[in-house]
Length: 141
Image 1 (cartoon, one colour):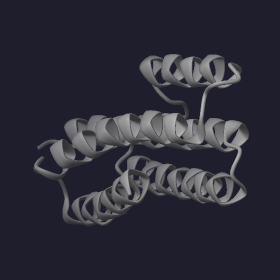
Image 2 (spheres, rainbow, N blue to C red):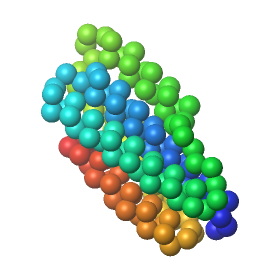
Image 3 (cartoon, rainbow, N blue to C red):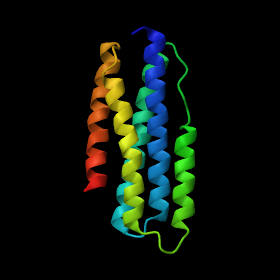
Image 4 (cartoon, rainbow, N blue to C red):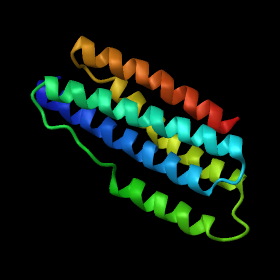
C-alpha cells in the first residue's frame, strides 16, 4: 500500500471513530439508566482518543487528518435523537441502535486491518480493532 492509500484508510477510520464518539454521546444524552449513560460516555471518550491517535499517524505520513464523521453517521445520530424523543423509546432500543453502529465500526476496522500499511500504523489499527471488538461485545451483552 502506498502512503496515500494508508492516509485514506486511516482517515476512514477517523470518520468511523468520530461517528462512534458522536453516537455514544447522543446515546448517553438520551439513555435513562445512569450506568448506561456512564458507559456510553466512556465509549465516546475512547472513540475520541482513537480518532486523535489516528490523526497523529495521518499527519506523520504527510496527510491532512479528517476532523468529522460521516454523513451516514450523522443521519443515524439524528434518527436516534428523534426516536429518543418518543416516550416509548427504551434504553434497550438505544443499545440495539448502538450495536448496529458498532457493527459498522467493526467491519471498517477489520477491513483496514487486512490492508498493507506501515508497521506503526498497522499496530495502531490492530490495537484499536481490539477496542472496537470489546465495545461491540459490551454493547451486545
